[in-house]
Length: 109
Length: 113
Image (cartoon, rainbow over all chains, first blue to last red):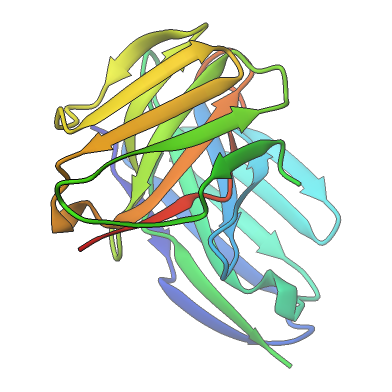
């Protein structure tokens, strides 16, 4: 099956700083989603982005499918951005998303 | 409010008990999913339902039994569970299939004594 690798595994930021999270995958995909899981366990869908670039407020994501990676950008980070960010992918004909192990982000005041 | 509601939020049960987890989605979606999230492991897909029909069972032990009476409701019936089944169980839905954004409930945190 597809392998998903996220980096870095842990990240500590000062409030107001910017960051880039990376997701590498081992095979071609037609489905890629970014999620944020807050410290209370709630999992929120941030982007559905199998290719191209999208922006939503302080967050943006870019997927370069031909090079098998996706990037999540967080600008002007806030303490509420803390949590774990997951990348999940699905290949053609796949019935499931394969999740990475996540990047744990801690934003300190 | 995520549009996907799970109950209960927390559940503690003995290995011989029978309990059920409930998921309800208010998004008009036709596909629903059960996931298991264990400590230090990626999310694992358990079951997939499309238009009330189970389309995938990801080699889940028979002590977990799903039920989907309609497109808005999904249950996970539990019986004779093991301590390693302690985890966060998450329900999700998407419009029609896997190739659309998935929306998750808040999960049920299950502890097996």
